[in-house]
Image 1 (cartoon, rainbow, N blue to C red):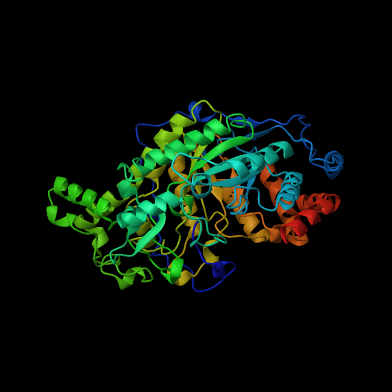
Image 2: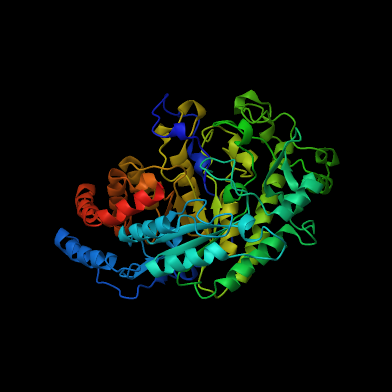
Length: 572
């Protein structure tokens, strides 16, 4: 998830962003590359088939009550919930499919849904919670499949124990699954309530060779994820990191082949800290970074420096290859505190700056390309979609240098679009561009830090449109209020700030963070049910929010026993 501190929520502070700080040029999109997927290729829809498809819901409350009676009858089944759902489309919205058909909502499961002992955590609570989500009309769930749990004992030995049970539970209840291949450590980022380390045999190799960890210019090591500088080196018990990731995905495919395409509809491939394609430039562990600091470059392990040296020699400037920028400040500086990132005469806007930032960002793109090539080959013809998560780094977005994005590996500045190359890379592999901070509004964030999440989301949407790649969204922080829900609805409709030709587009899916006891509190649950219904109706629905909320209130009332059971079970 995009990393922002909880105190950001609901803050209405400071003056508006200065008009001179964010210009249209900062949101400009370069012409699409010649290598594009055709609209026809991107128009393929995949359906989540129910065993007993029901007719479309009536827009009036009476029709909804009829559907509710069927749903309530399903909840009375002693050993689970019957799958009674509309035939829905989990479409490639973003650029594919006809607009206006609604956006399916998935819900992230707790990080510790599977225990360190490879069993389902709080099994009774999990079942009750999944049934409650199904009752709300949720399309499915997102589950982290932790490398550090499944392959923790020894290389090539996979224990799918708890995941076998959890995915079968989802299938029985009638929920689809987005499975995240989580090759990172859990712990140390916003929202990380548990600690799940990398596999023990990986940690042993990192202990022997600390340069397998991301490293900053002060020698601080970050072990959340194996450094991409070592991607192609056989440093993990004779295998390369990319081979380890591919072998894990292949084992997952073989073990769950009977669920692929029906229950498991998406594989999100983890590519860095927090599962995002980025460098660990803003680590919260031990208070190293605090919002809204600019972060720090993470390329000082010997493997990355070796690549930098070769790139500098090939460029004809070997003197640039010994180190990264030494004047880029510290994690908690602001852009104007540093020589490299400052507005006037900053190193980022020089020939050296362009050389370094191009190399640094290309290393990240190459990393994504390697893993996606494997994922695409492994899951080909299985009926699942592949997705990659990109961080919503919105602080200091209104400055010229966009320093926090640069340290994370996104070469996005006032004068250069850093998201189009990422979108084009994903398009080459038919992957979904999953983006965070969809729930945020510019004015909620500290304006002295020139935060602009809405403008950032708009830029990303334009980049995915230009590259013809589907766009999906997530909220970065837990939100239960209508104000956030309305912003998600607005953002997911992709009403871009330009005149687009052809059909209107929507996001292909939205994943809600996260299932927890707070979600099942009466007031929050009522708002959430209304939100899911509104998302499902799509951009062409003209019904008012209050009307949908009245229907949701009735739905909440008749399903109250089930939701209460989930809430109680989760708190024990």
